[in-house]
Image 1 (cartoon, rainbow, N blue to C red):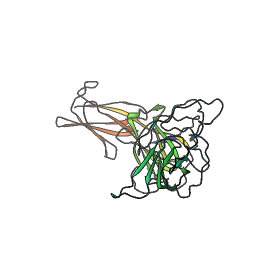
Image 2 (cartoon, rainbow, N blue to C red):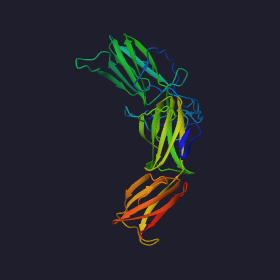
Image 3 (spheres, rainbow, N blue to C red):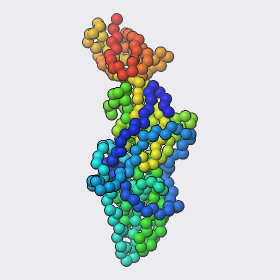
Image 4 (cartoon, helix red, strand yellow):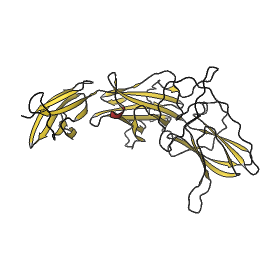
Length: 358
């Protein structure tokens, strides 16, 4: 669902392969029950109402096969911010063999960790950040971090005892208490994460990345709750990993009134491509002494809608403003005098508005 002067399109595309920053090279693992698992401070949102299924999500898991080609190892990724990466098309990737956990040394245990998108969904083979903490705070009240690992299936050697394991994938995280003995303890986590990639368009033209931004909110725009965005500024083309659920997007083209709001749904283990279409144009304002003349510098501008609301204010000889289609008035103040002109914005038709200084 969408509000604003525009609409949202969930683009269908072919199968995509993630580059190492997301590393969705997925291998089949046997996952043990994780009844003790708790989600972190960013649990998946509960959809407040039914929203249309976009049907455009494609699996993040590449298939295996004889013709598959190797993929480079995952690159380190910053935490706690969401992972962002381009997802170019690529060749099918081979599933690497799973290394057996090392034998535990005397008086040591091996914590063998893995994660998957859901109970019956693929394993996650990259982009994970694992942290192992002491299960009790020290004398300062801090839970000491003992190990950190960014592998897909790390085997962490530790003395027997009680620990707290935390794992994160983008904005999705989970935590579990474990009791490690002098042997291998296999712990499987569930991270119901999905990928979201956004872009903006006016007509058939793609909006440049530096002219559009997106804010992501939990739930639906229609549930009536005020809330802060969970991600306030997402660039076009970046991939954001989110908990499975319903969200709404606020798309800002420029910094005036070209705003579109859209409800979307993120599915675990899927990448959803969303195209937000704005009905707007880029308008350049000029104050001139004669028609077609040179623009006068140091002009103060206000753009006003038919209701008298100020949409945009600026100062300069050639200010540019992105406006939704519709009727406006441009008011120019220069050397103590005020000049104005009415004009109309047509979707996708960029242009100049000259105001005569007389």
